[in-house]
Image (cartoon, rainbow, N blue to C red; front, top):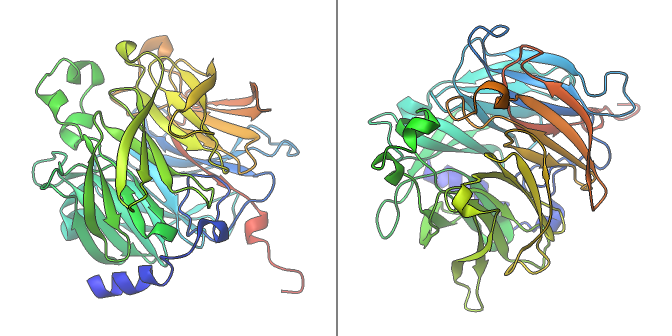
Length: 427
């Protein structure tokens, strides 16, 4: 199994970023298709709410083409028939399918988006993650050549944060598993994955386990012992053989990882949720990878809780959402060693995920973090909002109220386009 993995990855591990792009800048560089212009759809992976609509997790399709009569409206939903704390999703390398899952169990749902991009279909359920790997709560789905690398957050034994990665082929067959390092400085936690094929590097970050993320947030933060159970590391891996090379100390639960897509750059950036710090992971002149704190997000004393981030395609700008104060921040990364905030705006009473178009002119924001961590009462907004960005101001263009539409809690997003799957003339 290890050999089959190595052969598959090594075939493309040295590809440069310049040859492989995606419309949304935070996708795997192995994804083959690019939305060159206006996207048609945003797919929203949505947490079900008991008593609201069918109560189930679902994939919601929103029309986001301003030329469409259905602009800013929901045009399709596909329900899973259950609630599993829907969280993240990811495209396969050919961009024909979306893999999506939840943090409370081990099932992964596979949706066909190529047959009819406006109406995705649930075509497969992968249910052996726990049995084959011992991991629980699939979080990140990262496309490799013909494969999907899945980062989990927890485990089936004690539901702590000791976890790892599982490798599947695109047909949903389990290939191999790799635990997160828990020695030589490793803490065993996982969260996000991001690769730099040119450097043969996989970076991982760290969060917490089921026992923490399924608890109400107000209760959790009062539990001093539980608050010790968060990740404080990132790991540098050899991508070809999937072996850890170095553990980096990055305190405060580093979350999403974004590599600069500028081919001249050799760095990635992340935000630490509990400390409100930006961290740079960069290769030095000797070829060693190191992590360095380079910036502050808001006022850490007020615990703004930075969540999702999105890097611009030139590597010179970074969007950061902070959940507690509902703000969207923009940082100038012209000097990644010293990011400077140049813009901020309240975009909701609570905000989490942020995605941007490849040209950087459109930004999409959703509201939900985790079912037990979302705010209550009037602050419990659940939405997707679309914005135009002119380089100096975000202007809201549409909103879908997921509570009013009886859909649930809006979380992760991926962009879609009819043109990606159009048959050539005469074909």
